[in-house]
Image (cartoon, rainbow, N blue to C red; front, side, top):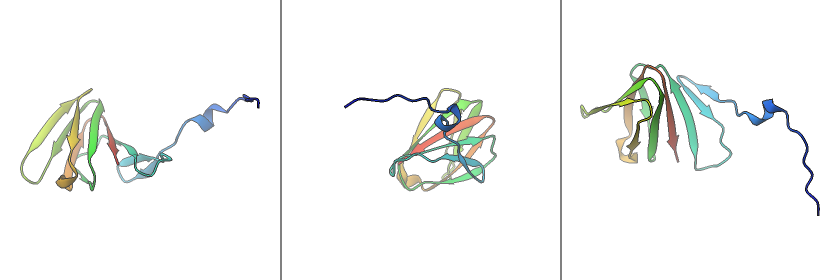
Amino acid sequence: HCTIFSPTASASLRMLPEQHAAEARYPIPVEDFHFSIFTAVNNQTVMTSSAEIVLVIEGTATLSHASGESLLLHVGLSAFIPASIGRWLLTTTGKVCRVSC
């Protein structure tokens, strides 16, 4: 058996997101993995039903919860959000990456 290499158009290598309100969701072909990016949002409600990690990739972000707790993150910092949180709010001046299962 022989492997055949053929060129692929660069446009087909890049995954384009599906826009859902303020969240750009990337169609990852794996059922239990989700990846999205929020850009410049103010008090955006985010619902979670599984564990998540958020990573600030540009600017700053504030994560807050109805309990009154809030967390300020700068570029390069991340936070783990447990599934039990349910609903939380996101404010960002730049971009925040969200990964969940």
